[in-house]
Amino acid sequence: QKEVEQNSGPLSVPEGAIASLNCTYSDRGSQSFFWYRQYSGKSPELIMSIYSNGDKEDGRFTAQLNKASQYVSLLIRDSQPSDSATYLCAVPPNQAGTALIFGKGTTLSVSS
Amino acid sequence: DTEVTQTPKHLVMGMTNKKSLKCEQHMGHRAMYWYKQKAKKPPELMFVYSYEKLSINESVPSRFSPECPNSSLLNLHLHALQPEDSALYLCASSHQQGPYNEQFFGPGTRLTVL
View 1 (cartoon, helix red, strand yellow):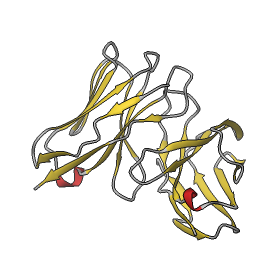
View 2 (cartoon, chains in turn orange, cyan; view 1 turned 135 degrees about the vertical axis):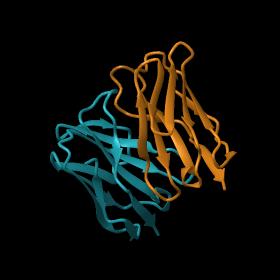
View 3 (cartoon, helix red, strand yellow; view 1 turned 90 degrees about the horizontal axis):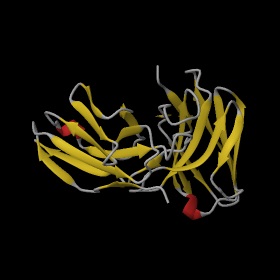
């Protein structure tokens, strides 16, 4: 059974702090990794994708991938109240995989 | 433009009704997906269409019937649903099938079955 694990939270951080969201996956064959943000009552929005080991930065967001440890993380710098949402880690299970396997999501709350 | 549209936004139906959900994208994507999401759960894949052909059916009950009339449109026909089918139904699309293709979601249809 292919699995994607996330700490469900809630993760609470003050405004301006760094929020760190973590995800582990079970399938060593996985090649691509996605982070989605989902506001309450809305649909998931793709915010980051990462395919290679290391860091990928996009504005206030940094995705980090370590395939040896089967670990992917999302850092949000200068957190804002508008970042309060559920963050879903999604992993296609293998090289031929199409279906996204989602973690259960981490709920982030940023207090002003 | 990474927009996927879905209609209707909300749908309330009885267990004997027949209704359809519609999804449209104009990004030239050749893979389209239906997901179901229950409250406080992640999305679950239902169907995948690739080049207008059904590629994956995740053992979904026959009361859900997908259709892909052309490369831009995806429908989900609903018949004799149960109250437990109430959920947010999400359509997504990607350039092609495969792990490196980012999937973009539409806003969803909130379905309530009475």
